[in-house]
Image 1 (spheres, rainbow, N blue to C red):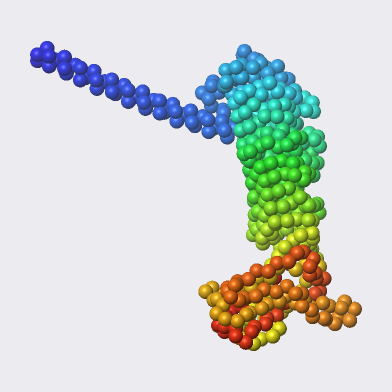
Image 2: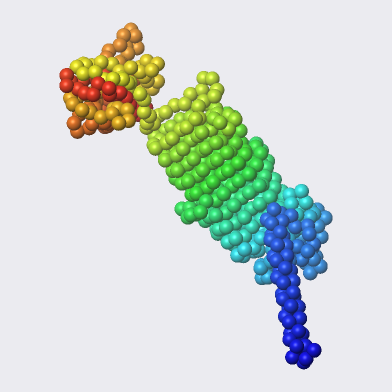
Length: 479
């Protein structure tokens, strides 16, 4: 072998080995990345018992801090000292399995840091008992902070500011007083997520989560509460903005504000038998939920959707009252208990059939239109707002006129006698409106009382065509 050939072969061998080394490094890096992702997932779920994971965090039980987790020793000083180092090093604070005894305010400094997080080994492993009434944290939360896998007996959070992108996963909180163990009075906390946790009250009916901002709520991304079990406790909402409750279970939803915006409950269950649940605010949704007590749609409830709630397993029980409500959709949420009423008061609008006639003939005068099941009869008093008349698809005027007028039959509550009168609200199909005509009038122009009947009568000219026109009519009322 010549020197040249030997050098070339050695060079190629070196390159091959370098490539192998690089591939090994890439593979190792990928494995480390995957391990890190797995560690992060375990941490998010609140499981951090792996010693390799714990070394990446700050543990107050390390000799440098000296925590003794025996259910008796007060480890407040050790946790605060560990939190100082964790905050500086931008590492999570890890409370390993055991019974921790801590003072209120122990996290007050640490959780103000950006991205600072507290992890435990899960609700059945890491337990915290407070030495007195108060909160483990009270103040302004740092952005991106979080609490994972803790079982806390006493007050946990009183958030007075901050809290954007806060994470609260896999925790259990047991209240020790009637005060809510979780409070959010901050007008921020947007995009925070509260998932897979339980909060227990001292007494049935106590508020255990309170979201009542003291100022104008500036949250722009919804706060998300999902899979939260409140046991017999209540969820309190004030004048909050963009709040999503999904699979939240408890005794009652208490909406104590009047100017909330975008409070949505989906798939929730509130077993508030005998207690009223009042829904308030703008853009409030209650969909697919079970509410066992009385439901009040309050004066400020508008642009809202209620239902379908019947298909979940239980309908709304007892009275649903709409007081000065507006722009509301109630869908498939009928009362399921005998002698319970749904009362529409102060502005509930609905559309009823005014009757039909197929193959409309010419030369008719005040002929009553047919209504399936007979004339519509009012249960409560109200007002006639409008009339719509139309033909079937592709059916249009050819000649003449077709006039429909709303009539009402007024009952004498003493004798039972009825008097039929024309309201004067008419709609005409003619050369101008060939297929459909909408007529409206000011509220209370024509009113009706409970027991009155509404219907429509038809008049056609001698020149009316086509006689194949199939007429449908609709009356809009407010009751």
